[in-house]
Image (tube, rainbow, N blue to C red):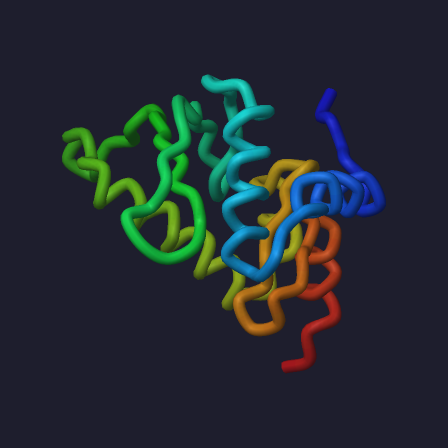
Length: 141
């Protein structure tokens, strides 16, 4: 059974992490610190339908964000040889991109975890799996 977090609880956590912050950089640091302190590694997650294990978090050398160090089972290529990490990521990205181009909401429902949260790169809006499915279904061609 998957665990779900509601938006109100997410807002509470963000407020808790950033209550004493002055500016965007301090808010970013506070949020990442809370994640690093409260999220226990390793844990399993789904990335584009593939089960992975997040083993640790790392701070980026510059800019915003946090890096998740992950491990996953490698699929093989058509000749039966194992794909390297870069090829596996390209394969996963290709599957996601193809589903998006086709408007395949069912693919998103199958492959995004129920407790998935993502940030829309165009609007900055926080999306759930259900939001992404609805966006695909409501897309005007």
